[in-house]
Image 1 (cartoon, rainbow, N blue to C red):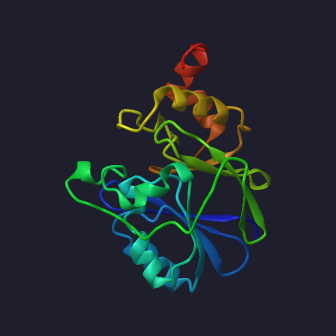
Image 2 (image 1 turned 180 degrees about the vertical axis):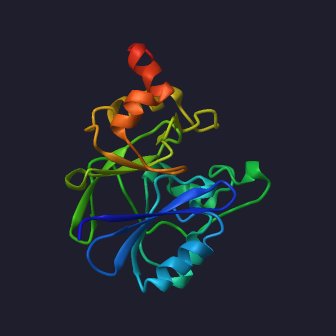
Image 3 (image 1 turned 135 degrees about the vertical axis):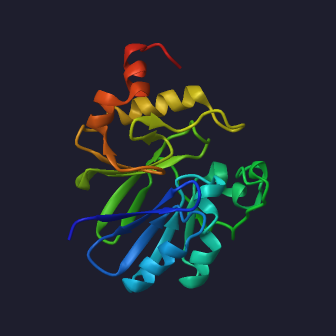
Length: 218
């Protein structure tokens, strides 16, 4: 069994929680977002064990379900990029304060950085640091499987916002250019919306088309 990715949209912003599974019953969960009951029910119904929780970044809609998921599955390791480690305890940084409610979660148990190898059972991913939407945004690139867990960097037909206080448009441009170096057949599972491919976005995404036309941007 190759890498299996289940996409479970959660909450008002339909943030994609991703369940990454190899050949057994232990899984990695990326981005347990708001209102995580559908995610928890899926995992329990499938009799799956959560091996680790990985955050593509630490905005409120990607972290709000951490504590509920952790309580249901015995507090598995929680990993985030070091630039956003403190965001888990700061509503101003994770943007929940801007939404009118304060969200915090348990602390991360470790960090993940550029070039690090992450195991999902026998499958291996390389961590890609993809700043722009947020300073600690990361992707998980399973090269041998042709899969990218991309967070809020690249969407089908769009890209992540860069108008938040901690966003950086120039950094986003560089991150998008980096993704354009991946093979066209790479399947991208974004933080919102349906899965896509690098090739599809290269041909149809207006933001990438503009980027490729204006090589000096950023």
